[in-house]
Image 1 (cartoon, helix red, strand yellow):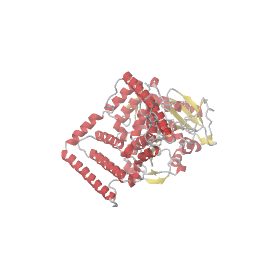
Image 2 (tube, helix red, strand yellow):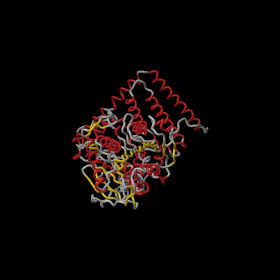
Image 3 (cartoon, rainbow, N blue to C red):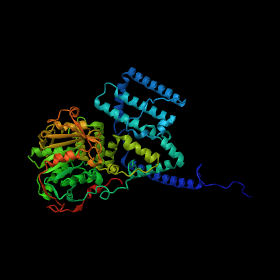
Image 4 (cartoon, rainbow, N blue to C red):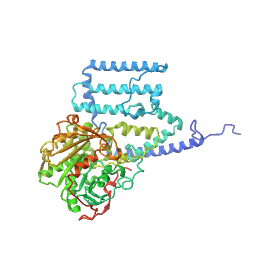
Length: 608
């Protein structure tokens, strides 16, 4: 009996796709299914081993319950706010209808300056997408405005509610969803859905990199290698202990200032933010201007170093470096730079040295460093007793805080730029992230030893003990910042979201010696890494004899200068760095070199 049915097509053909395209899709979906199955198994195994995770690790439920109770306490105000929102919607419907009828109308809501989410012309040219955009902006602004107007809640709770409301608002942007983002819709039609398939594969790759936890790639991680195309300034490791390696950089001038320069970077990040590439390397620039530069490269600790404390970082960090620098150069006097938390450590170290009559630091510069934490900005949102207890519980299991935890916290401060833009690019558009050295560094996370990190969060951020005379006692020495009399150059970034300029400025009222405060344009990174040849941003200086009590008063009398502040800093420090002497070659002093810069400590990575 003959078979008269039509010949069978491909077993799983995709409608609208050719056989070759269908085969490509089948291969992709097979790969996705296999990888997903493995991830689910790994997750189940880890869940069984570690036990269930807390449903509310940030302890937000009680915060928002308390906030809601306060909000409902004035129902008339809430009803009025809802009426105002409804009136805005009605007005939006009216102008949208007018536009659909061909009339020219002005938008009710426009994105804020610098908001890149709605840059695609379709958000303005296409009526539907323009309506989605304006509806979102009206709702977002109404929600955040309503939250800020609730009476009867303390400042910390208000800040916490405002911060996490913004996280929700940012997450719900129509630009973050495939069907409401015109760029994604267009890419899906043109590629016949291949962008979404590729995006799903990118998502699985990031889950695999994070061993089941989503770690979003912000750049092409394979495009850079530490010591090859980032952190390339020549030098030698001349000293190390279990906490740090000390790098001495090769001179770029025949003569150098007699006083060496020690840079103490944050241990939350790696030092090579100051040596990303030759054209913006602060380290290279400093050696070109006659400084013998030493840099501390902190260890990336594991569970074996869980008991390291803040005192260890001081003694085995800058204090050990001072001893080593004297052996390497024969110079007892050293100038220093402390960056961010490295600056907090340097301020503590200076107070400790002052109490002990140790005057080896001739002058100190601080990059975006806080010492008074009464107004720490949005990072303070994460510092309350419930959240600190959760962090300590997590650290107790491993002996350290995983670097990705800190990276996520910093990324949340600029979620649209550092989270959601990559969700759209990587997962919805199906594109690979663009190679960018700064974002490679940003993703090169470091761990925090449990004991040290707990001490730092509780005593600095929560209790603000460093700013209080004798509030901290280290090695039986009461720490009093008012005993610091060495010349200080204090840098802050105007738009810094990690160490706000207002908070950094408070140090001018604590140190007893001369303080030259400088406000740089931009933020925590670009405000520091801004070489003069780039001719970017600006900086402000106020030449009054004494710094006024507040940053606002200081700015009222400040003068704006175009471009980088590096030359002003060089003029300040060079006058305090002694006469010129023959250039020093790393390893030619009493400390032999045993490893090429940037050393091995900085190359320990958590995720590739």
